[in-house]
Image 1 (cartoon, rainbow, N blue to C red):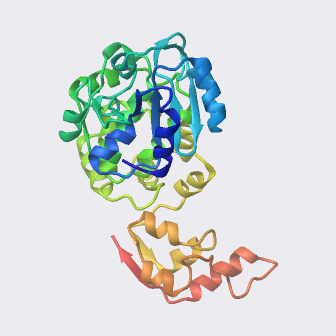
Image 2: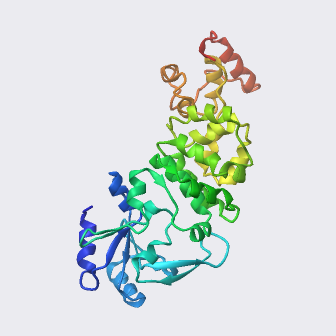
Image 3: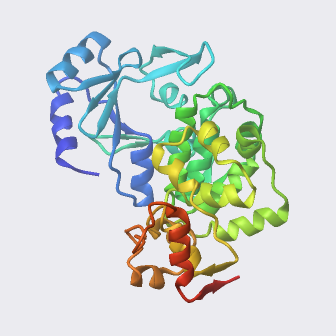
Length: 350
């Protein structure tokens, strides 16, 4: 793992310490052969006062000064720390510094995210069997007590499974099922769901969405085996960010407002989960009427590119349908009459 910024940091910290480590996801991704876009670094043997001076010299921006964390380009640079739960919420922790690598690594959520790699020697520190678990494609928590202190880790387990196609260890599943998700902010909940919505292995995420009791706790929904297997087949593909919620909404007859409120959805997803449900029989008249509201690209993609050729031929992929003549005295009726003048064509039959 070499790049110009990392080489610069090697030279920058060399006069002060030989214990500087790449930690967490970037080390995991290197083992998996995934190119990381962001990197976390922990710096040992430097006092907080000296660290602040060095970060100012570097031009880094403090993003969590109470947690000794600075941002520089694509790097989060921090001092090694331990965390003790003091109050509810994702940030309800008391932070203490440590100079022991194993102690610092214990605060992390999963063994695969607790790996440390010395930027000078390349030595890998693996105190919790992270390399083994990565090779076996297992998500396993490190410590029962510390893991249970942060319920956000339940959602992280789900989205990691969905992104990496990893299974979650049974012991970790059992702890996740017991944790209370209500103390988490909706915005933080969405940040983890967003990673799953954009993941490659959506059906893995869906499985743990149910298995970890996330669906029941956040949306008060449960699934029969038949429903699970049917939706799992749908989630074998994931063409667009709103795909998961769109099909979940219509299959389980969930009100859009419940999803919007419970997950704090951004405007784009709010609009897309409200797109019309695919009927069993699709006609040209149905699509003309639908395209009065919005271009049909997203509708088609959400429904496995339904009627794509016809939609593109009619120039409705990126544009709304524009009626040729509208009677200002009764615009709705005149538009409907125009659409009904077209010969009815069945484009898809369920």
